[in-house]
Each structure stands twice: as structure tokens, then as C-alpha cells.
Amino acid sequence: MDSALPTPVLSVENLKVHYRVRGTRPWQRHNVVRAVDDVSFTIGTAETLGLVGESGCGKSSAGRAIAQLVAPTAGRIMLADVDLTALSPRQLRRHRRDVQIVFQDPTSSLNPRMTVAELLSEPLEIAGLSRTAIRQRVNELIDVISFASYHLSRYPHEFSGGQKQRIGIARALALQPRVLVCDEPVSALDVSVQAQIVNLLKDIQARLHLSYLFIAHDLGVVRQVSDRIAVMYLGRIMEIGRRDQVYARPRHPYTQALLSAAPRVRRANEVAIPRTILAGDLPSPIDPPSGCPFHTRCPKVQAVCMAATPELRDLGDGRRAACHFAETDQ
Image 1 (tube, rainbow, N blue to C red):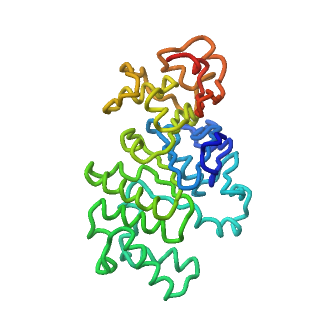
Image 2 (tube, helix red, strand yellow):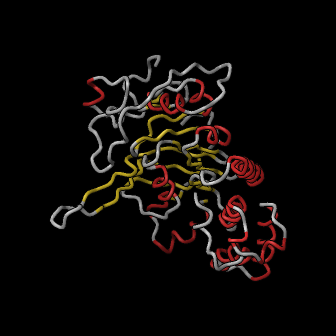
Image 3 (cartoon, rainbow, N blue to C red):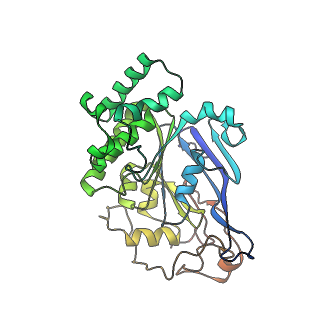
């Protein structure tokens, strides 16, 4: 690990999340969807790692596995020195409070039959807090999201999308987690509201020293909140490094293609990226390509790309890329 990076609070090692799906005919065997296929990264204390990529690349599956909402197929998820994947259900319950998740759709993530007070109290009641402690904690939470006490008696349908996401954030913060998995938390919101939620998350992080895994496909939003960027494609990390490094000079062809397609104001230290239009669609995770998973769409593909899977290698400047030709000027 780069010595300049903060001490990791979360370490993901060789994470795999595979799903078995039925064939389309009764006599066909089950297929395996390789949603996440050998992913590794760390997140330091009070650091934000942005996880980006096209829809279907496995970002949300990785986030849900880290939050222990789905069981990993293989790999380790270390919270400080505790391996979450090795715990029994009873042991895991004690650590669930340490990793919480903010979902993409605030409407479907909140029970419409519960008031704000009930939504925020529920995880505290499950944790066994007293009524007095619950009341005090709920008041602290509504202060964090800039709600007033009269909001506590209202139901989710009485709020806008941005306000519902604030409630979702407060609920995720209820048990004072160490890591917050933000699964595309602003993608369902208007642009002006997105900025408010992003600023709220940044303020919360500064106040509480939380670590974030911020999952998104909007590179502009990711740039605002992230300290480092991990670019994911077909279940694998293609490039990972400090935010300014990745945006100034992307080293993997897939990162270059993503940045070339995103509207942005180029800064003085950033190289001009020629517009790259990727051919074809994302391959099926049921039958991924041999060799480099990106070779079927890569504009710089060579024979070695089809035959050998590139390792996620250190490039010497604190970042890593899974490309056979990452050391060259691309």
C-alpha cells in the first residue's frame, strides 16, 4: 500500500460475487453470473473511494457484499482487523452497525407506513437502546440532516426525493457506522438536489470522520466527493489511483473512454483525451471474454490482450492498472 494513503479501515481482498441463474430451458444447467470477479482495494479512515463504471459492471454487487447484504463467493472483507466473511451470523450481527448503506432509490428504501421518527428509531430499538437514548439519538440525527422536530411525525410520501434521501442517510448513520456504502445515492435526484446531497455527505464525513465507498456512474459527481477512484469493468478493477491522477492522465483505455465521453472542464494540468466511442455492448458476465475482459471493445487491442489476463499492476506513481500496455503513453 502507498505510504501516503491513510491507514485502511476497510480492506477488500480478492472479492468474488457469483450468482447462479437458471437456464432458459428446463433441461439446461444453471449458469453462473460473475458479477464481481477478484476485486481488491482499501479505504482509509475519513477517505472516499469512488467506484465507477458502466451499468452492469458489478459496482452495486460489490457494495452489497461489503455491507453483508449478499454473501461473497470468495475473498475477504476486513474491517480493521476483523474478517467479516469469517464470522458466524451471531458474530456478524455485532459488526453490522459498522458498515451501513445508502440506497439509490430513497422512495423504495423507506417503509411508507412508518413515520420519520419510527424509521430512525427502528435500528436503535433493534440494537437495544433505551427509550431515552433513542429519543436523544433521533434528535441528533434530524439535526445532522437539517430537519425540524415537526418532520418526525410525517410519512415518506410527504417529502421530496432529496428529503427522502436525507432520511435514508440519517437512518444509515443511526448506529454510528465506520464505513458508509453510498450506492448511487444521487442518481435518482435532480441536478440541483444532487449538489445538496453531495455537500451534506461531505459535511457529515468531515464531522464524523466516516469512510465512504461512493458508487456512481456520473464522473462529475464522483470527482467532487472522492479522494481516490477505482474504475470497474465486467466485475474487475481496471484502474485505481488518486482522483487528480486519474482525471489528469488516465492510463487504462477504458478509463480514457469513460472520461472522453463525460462532459467536463479540462484543468491546466490535464491532458486532452481524444473522444473514444466504444464498439458493441458490455459482454455478458455469464460468459466473459478470455484474456483481458475489455479486449472485445478496446481500440488498442493486440494479440496478447486476447490470450492473457493482465494483472492489476503498480505503475510506480501510487496507482495501479490492469493493462498490458499501461506503462506506455496511451
